Length: 89
Image (cartoon, rainbow, N blue to C red):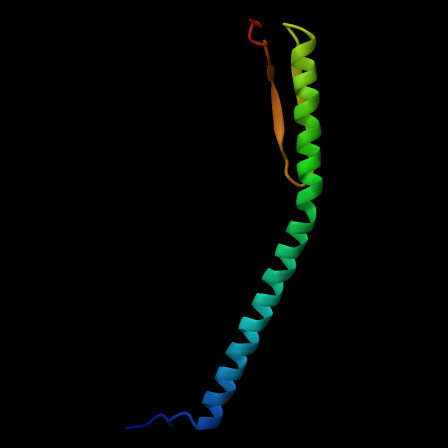
């Protein structure tokens, strides 16, 4: 019958240290990705606002206007369709 040796305190400390380093590395990566995403929000908001203003202008300019836009940037937003504005009262 063979027995397996018990881990020593040194082995336990090494495992704990490695786990701490892994958690620290993951937290750093998450922080970096979140910072990059937050930095892009103002640009994304401005682009969206401009697209909505343009769409509203096209809707207001005629009753049978067709809107068709495609944006293939990071957000990959796509819209295509026919728009008929509601009659004004």
